[in-house]
Length: 589
Image (cartoon, rainbow, N blue to C red; front, side):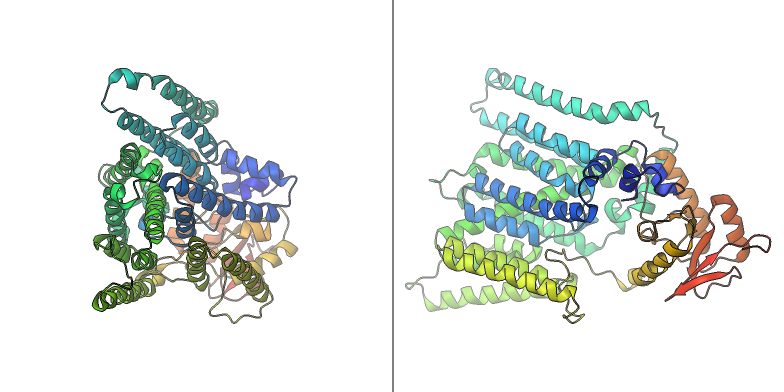
């Protein structure tokens, strides 16, 4: 946001290090420029809300259309869209989310990236490349990676399509791939040429670059040895479940239906994508932690796991839809329950239940076993959910209602389905209105309609994680906005980057606003070492002399310190656990 505001107003936070560092050409330039230009005509909060809602609509619509196209079932599309919007099966690298609550470049590029993968699975290499162009411009790393993956998948699809294999037939496809490669190369040049013109330099050696980017700023994305073991278990369970689904894709679907996903070329394309992503993660570990390389650190391959998650939910949606279509109700119900967690999904795929039906002729003990299995899976899923993640009421409500409405449509109860959807919409509006005016109790609180569950931190992590008390921040920021000069610079606690936007005042640096060019990274790390490593995340160990020394070095006139900080500089105001002070030199204010 600071970069966007700077592009809209060149005087915005003129003394802010991060805003100045990111206003030059860099990885988020086109994203910020797009928002800034549109923001001149649309009120920014309205623009972000519309973009946020539009992203959900776009991703779920693309998911539904891709699932319907690949599986031949509209019901599969509805199930897949519900799963993508409502459930994240694992959090390895904290990047498996296809959707996000924030309008950041990665997720603004996501609809285009998913469309590229979809077209790649169909062997449409030119279409895949064309739709990836906006993704490359918005988020170059994600855009380039997904474009390459989609193109390789399209090549694999075309090779598998030539049966028996003849080089002459394959060479006929060469012009299409040449055109796609040209489009891809030309788009990449849009990034490469300005980077060379602006004389971006590599000031950091590889080891230092990887240390700062991976170990200091993004260990939760890039350093697997710091992640919880349960994450690897959940990811493995999900991958195995999808592996089994893919292996049996040919027999899972009805032969008479037009279902590309059961064909060899499509399955080869999916295998190709899975292989690239998994091998990329392996290389990401090796070439970040063992043999550090700049390319692996920049690529952040673990974020590509969301592609596997997306394709996996399409496969699962198709299988569940097939069970419902063939009247195998127990198998369909068990499948719907199993998606609540990766382990239960794996159990579902391991069980040979594809031919299991409950009819009037079924023996009673078989029906008892079926319903016992349903109860077991449901109980296991609930236990895993409650012990590992914090499921919000709205998340559970979203998934349950989505599957219920999809089920009603599948059994041709469209009037009931429409009535249910209208009722749910009115209920959501009522709840949100009541929540906005404070009529709902604090716990449980319906906060976000499609909030993702996040891993519960261990007690040690909770104890050591520096926090931002947003109530204190907002109140002090409002005071600062009213009482300090517009060009003031503040020293704030490590995670108080929001100060820039609320107070509209510059700060020395913070822990989240990270410039991705070497010049900015060097300065960001220098400030982090000088201030927060030396005096603590909340500046609890800072003294009068330290404040004066740092003020001369970094040019700040005010500081936000804990109430208990032992300094003699004059206090302007305080709120909660923090106070705002003015740096005093030579006995003057």
